[in-house]
Structures are given as structure tokens and as C-alpha cells.
Amino acid sequence: MRTSSWLKRNKTERSTTSYHDALTVGVIFCIDEVNSLPKIDSFIEKLENDNKMVTVLAYYPNKLEQYKHQYDCFTPRNISFWGGFNTSKVDRFVKQPFDYLFHLDEKPSKIIQGILAQSNAKCRVGKYDSSNGYYYEFMINTEDKDYLQQMYDYTSILN
Image (cartoon, rainbow, N blue to C red; front, side, top):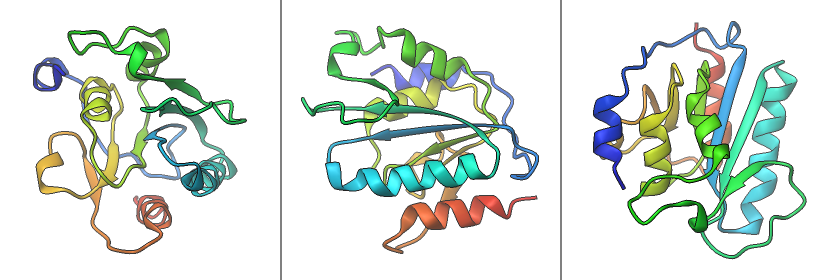
């Protein structure tokens, strides 16, 4: 992946908007297990109930069926030999100037980091990992089993 060059070239002005004033939210995750989908759906539903315009992008690393979700998704077929993305879904997603971009995975992935590096989101939120400081403006450090609930709770109180 060309993550480091994407990070260097991305000149997006980063800031933290009050959660209540935020209008647009992006959500990105890697789905490799069916049992994590209900938690993800619940998280997205909370954002929508807060009157946020939510755009979702899911990465399917294995040949899993697309389930019944209407999320935009991409697969390894959409990644070029040189590490770029060759799908308009990813292009549209990284160009959107989200107020918040939530990365829902607990473990970092080079594929998702590539998207975070290119993103025009004002504030990128994800799980704390000392090596991920370049990808997020706000990181959640918790060992709680319900990490997504913690992410929602901490972000929703930002002023």
C-alpha cells in the first residue's frame, strides 16, 4: 500500500466539531465475521437516530456473501497490484468531507489505513494504538467488550 505517501499528500484541515453540530458521518469497517454485524448495525442506527447523514463503506476481505445490507462495499478485487483502489465507491468515500469518520475495527488493517490516509474527513475516530497516531484525530483507549458503545459515548459528548 502507498499509505505513507497518501498521508504526506493529504492536506485536509483536521478539526473536531461538536458532535451535536456535526451533520455528516462516515463509517468504515472490515467485515470478516457475520456475528459482528448486529453491533455495527446498532452503532449506525444510533448515528442515524441522532440525525446524522451516515455514509458506510465495508471491506469484505474474504469471499463472504454480501448479506442483506445496503452498505457500499469493496473486496480485494478492487485493490490494484500497486496498492491503489480501483472502485468509484472508495473514491467517493475518501473525497467526502465528513465531520466525523468512524473506523469500527479493533485491529488496524493496511487496507483501511490506506483509506484513512486519503480521507478528507475533519475528524477520524478509531481504537487507540500507539502506531496509529497518523490516522486518527481522536482515539478511544478502552478494554471494554463493547468498544463501539464506548466510541459512541465518548464522541457524543464532544463540544
